[in-house]
Length: 155
Image (spheres, rainbow, N blue to C red):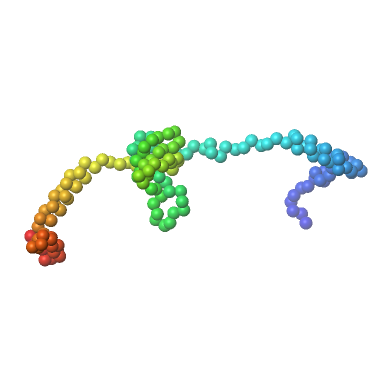
């Protein structure tokens, strides 16, 4: 059967003539000589590839950290945002859960946190409205406040 492969007979034969058989001693000498001449193949640099680092990462005050585990359906790919404490060339030190954690920049994404000026005024307005609602609630003789159901409240 023709497999399409071409074999040379000389590749399977000894370089010496067929009448001369190799002895064990000559075989071992040639094998040792061959193994002495072997040199290792240079290794490839798997980690030399550069990863994408956003330009804004160096200046951002908060970052998201990529979750490198297998995620469930609709689970967020990033955790955060975490405050940056210290920056190195390849690692950032973050404030995570009242502690510090060092994370590689390959797993980081800048978080664009806007200062909320309106939130302070909104908080003060909600505090005022709560205090007004508390004062409108009826008080019993013992000093407890009564919370009435919405349709029965009088204004």
